[in-house]
Image 1 (cartoon, rainbow, N blue to C red):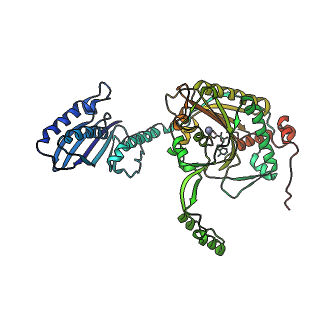
Image 2: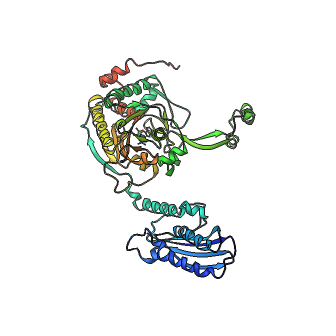
Length: 506
Ligand SMILES: Nc1ncnc2c1ncn2[C@@H]1O[C@H](COS(=O)(=O)NC(=O)[C@@H](N)CO)[C@@H](O)[C@H]1O
Ligand SMILES: [Zn+2]
């Protein structure tokens, strides 16, 4: 795409601009066009690619400018560079710059426009024309918007949307890394249906949410214990507690704020704690037995953020803005302190795809070498766990990095080949489909950059994370091993012990 910008602006000064100043203004315009606007422009850029003042006129205390550019020294950058020059020039005539009014701003992107491109609806875009080979935008922007580089971000956003449409079909990247040998299958049913049948779990009252009875929890805790022994203790990870209510600021820094909105469970706060303010809500419920949602909606603030989604982002404020001493690296921590929530795709699923799930989130950070080495150690430990301890039929594959998928980004070309996500999948005999039950990711410098974390050497700081989904482990394990404990690996049987049957429903 070739991008052109055009801008008209009125610069108003503290008094009438005298006739004799015209010459000085002319000189400042020429200097800007020939020298100032060429600063930092790559060699070989043609004249019409570089910002230029193509017209100007003085009327009373106002200097009106027309600026045009291609991609270099874009018109708003030219405007602010010129502002510096002209303030000095007219300062000599004892005139101060009072205000800049942007009276027009056009962006034209020329090149093949993919089918179905939707120009974003933003307050800054006053009109948009899209044809097969061109996109023309008129913006309504203030000088402050230009200082915040709104036009550049709009162009970047449109380019991202076009890329997504062009490569959209590429979808998720998937490349097989390892496949275990086939294992004996002791069960052919849907584990969730069987768990319900046996009273191990029951649907809870919120969407995609379950109440886990003792038998299910005994299995969750057995898996957790095995993770503690085989992974956490063996590799030296230490427990922390990461917050589970995530404010926007965390997701702004983690990048989730780019595109996680369709799947968030949003959180709002009362406008006031004053009981009198809320009395009518309780009264309404007392009288009707119904909760007045619309009335509540008027009385809350926010959403201030949402419930835990990816689990690792809310750790990062712990180290935000800090420099870590080399001798404390690599940091290896984990969190299992609460639930994650995702407003998943429609339809009722089994426990393998729920809106509220229980995950052990393993997180490590340090130099790139330390982070890659830790990931490799984790892969080896997991392989031992699934092959020898749980004796699962499983495979692993390199996929689109989880954080890109969650931000709706494409698999970035050219990122360091060690950066990425490995999914662990287990076969579910009853549906003959593979279920991703956990993953291991090398996230590169994404989080340290997002949260401004440095290491003593001043070199890159990288991080990685691994999410172990206990619902998914349980679904995969039961789908393959069934419910007869004699067919379970004895480590699991020993940890589960005698199953608790508490409830007798008549
Ligand atoms: N809807 C869901 N239901 C049950 N488990 C889920 C769900 N979504 C994710 N998980 C579990 O969480 C793991 C990691 O989720 S992820 O989105 O792939 N990755 C992340 O969020 C990373 N932060 C690592 O946790 C998945 O492998 C799966 O085990
Ligand atoms: Zn994570």
